[in-house]
Image: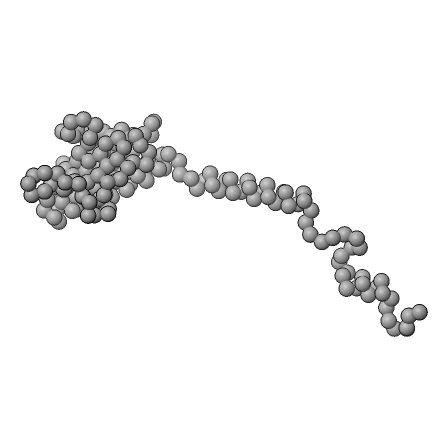
Length: 175
């Protein structure tokens, strides 16, 4: 018998866990976990597709980088009072400095003007007005004067093309 004023044992257990039905374990079912994983996978797939740049965006970014490097090379030619050249082939590009013995030497001491491969190689390059270097190599020479000849450098990879325009007084734009 139970003493008056004390609840029975079954009632005490039910009071300790009022929201828990008898006989059922707490937690998520396998179906609920699978639904959450599928939603997470779809979301992650959409985010990765949107964050990966397209080939057009990649070519545009590379043209922007080259335009900034061309501007730097032009400024270096004026500051150093030496000829600086941009030289590019289908796979890579580099910068050269004309030495004292009138020989073109690759820039190796400057990390910004070092040789780099094109990200979307092979790249077809077209310079207007045309370059005078024979073969597949294209060369743009920056002189000591603050005014150079305007030019348009067109980079193409597949059916995507981007143009870098120089106005001759140090402004480079990408179209």
